[in-house]
Amino acid sequence: MRAAVKFINGKIVAPIAFTGSYNVAMLGCIRFQGWADTDINLEFDRARQVLSARVQVTDIHLSNVPTLVNGIVVDMVQSSIDQRINPVEILQAAQLSTRLPIAAAGGALRLRATEVRPEIVDGALRLHIFYEFVRDDS
Image (cartoon, rainbow, N blue to C red; front, top):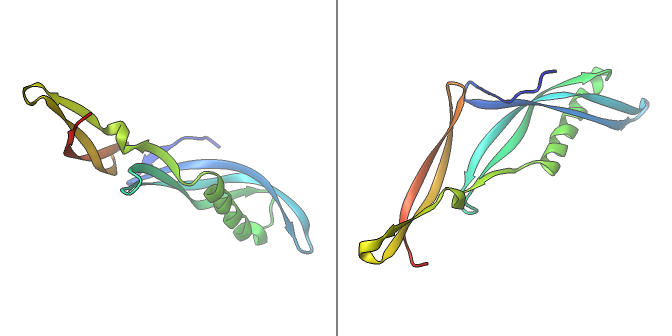
């Protein structure tokens, strides 16, 4: 398996490798390993002012595991990703804000990011950042 994050068809896709075990009735403990195809979805949380990513399993590839167990393993891998990884904080809006001193007025304006919209175009990630101007008394 070759690991690489790719920007394809408006999506961020990446493989994730895993290993684990599962106790199946009448089959006993089954050890498994493999890799999962994933989509990484970006979203901006206005309340928290954070751009975050969620990893979603789209397909799974297992080694030496009965087909009967595939569905169970997919759910386990997604559940594990949700518990251990999701959501991944990419950046905070405060990191995109800046202060503009206005000497003539004896004050300053702060450009505060209010929204971040991700867009995947031509194999690249673009972030469209929307700002509001607010008075900065600091």
